[in-house]
Every structure is written in C-alpha cells, then in structure tokens.
Length: 230
Image 1 (spheres, rainbow, N blue to C red):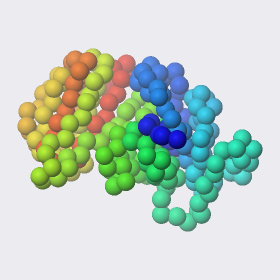
Image 2 (cartoon, one colour):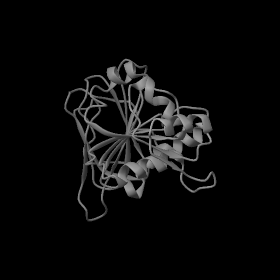
Image 3 (tube, rainbow, N blue to C red):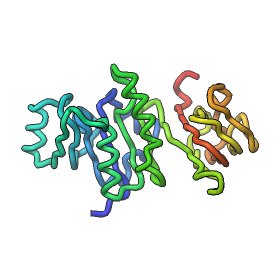
Image 4 (cartoon, rainbow, N blue to C red):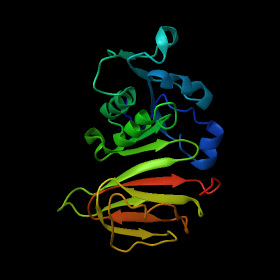
C-alpha cells in the first residue's frame, strides 16, 4: 500500500466533524491511512473515520477498548507504559514509517494536560518528520512549522492560502531571520522575528493566496478561522 496522506488520532479534545469541515475544507480528502494513538481511537467514529492501525500503551483506551479493536481486525502495536515516546509520537512515527509525507494530527490540543499539548506542538519539529508536511488540527486551529534547512540551505517557504480574514500568527521557536510575507495585512520584508516578543501574533490574511518565507530559524504558523475572536 502506497501512503500519501495519513491522519493520526491523539487523545486530546474531540474535534467536531462539522467544525473541521467548516474551518478547513478538504482536510480529510485523499487520506490513505488512519492511525489511532491510544485513547485517540475514540475520535474515529464521531469523525466518520475508519481506524487502520492502533499504537500506544493502552492506559487511556483500556482493555475493553483494545478488545473491540482486536475483534474489528485492527492491527495493534502495544507498548510498555514505561517508554520514551508519547502515544501521539508513536502514531506520528508509525505514519512516517509507511512512507506518508503528509500527516494531520487530530486530538492533539486541549485536554486536561497542557504538557501533552505542548509536547504535541513540539512533534512538528521531530527529526523524523523533516521534509514531511505535518500539521496539528482542530476546529479552531491549524498549526504548522516552517523550518529553514540551515545556514547554506537557502530559504524556506510555506503556502498560506486560505480564506480572507482568517488570523495568521507567526511565532518563532528560536531567532528567525529573513522573514517575508505576502498576502497578509501587516507585511514583513526580510525582517527578523526574535524568540520571545509577540510581534508576529494575529496577522490577517488579506488575499486567498498568501505565503511566508524565512532564511534562518524555525517559525510556528498558527491559523485561526475569522469567525473566532481575535
């Protein structure tokens, strides 16, 4: 099986299918593989998704949930509770091992554990995901990472196409140099965004076509539908 696009279901807040469809049209188009990470399996039915594989330590889903998956013939990779990777990380790595170069992680935000949400955002910078298009998604947020390939690797560009009026925040993970934008209300022209100051927060898409380019550093790109408050 050739995998182009994959979805990983993590165990954060349950996104609504209606909200996802309204905020990010086409988010599930062409998906070849759905991997549930532990309790993320509970997200599948409400989202109309079929689970193709399950990974995790089972502490969230429980033996009853695992039994249901086994009876449905879902391949299960059960890890010990004492492990270095989070369940969501296991899901991402499993998707990448199939050859998927486009991965959407759902259920990665919210939930009772802020540390888990932050760790999920950090997955965007996972070395194994280098060169892949990975995003965190729910009905209110899309998060991606733009990383320049190094001092001599040339600039990196991210397509920001979408609805006019949506919010686009550019949040540096480290000091980012050579930031240029097109199609946003507050333009940047080969400028620096140092880590710490919030200058890149709450920009606004002015055209359906937009983009951001950087020469050095790593930049989180957080998009929020215009229907939500600034």
